[in-house]
Image (tube, rainbow, N blue to C red; front, side, top):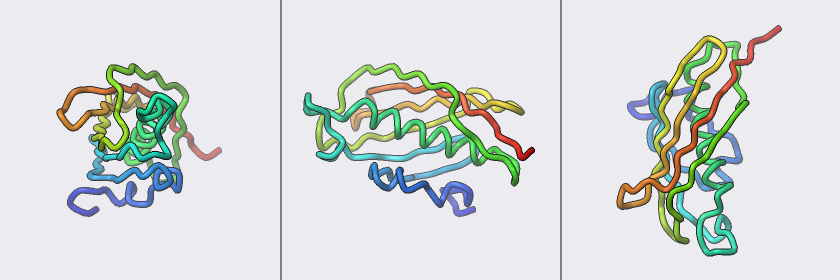
Length: 135
């Protein structure tokens, strides 16, 4: 494990790179990343697409869950809920913080807070991750 990024979190999926997600730190109890609202991620209203926000949160919650699994286990999202509070203007770099609310044997619940540069909350995503075990 590096000082800031757990070894299990270093190899992010290609979709995270496609979004432009930049992992800042990753520990089993907290994952932080940033993302810039690039033109490719903007909706017709000129702000970051809600689906992009949800995708970032899903990736972070999955990353957090993955760090809390055993060597032969995997995870998948089985539920996700998003509350949008503020728009993210084009060109803005958001910071995301994901923390576990529940780390159980079969499920984990992660909450991701999406912050604007002034630390105002743009959105909160709560998701449930199911632990998958080999048969």
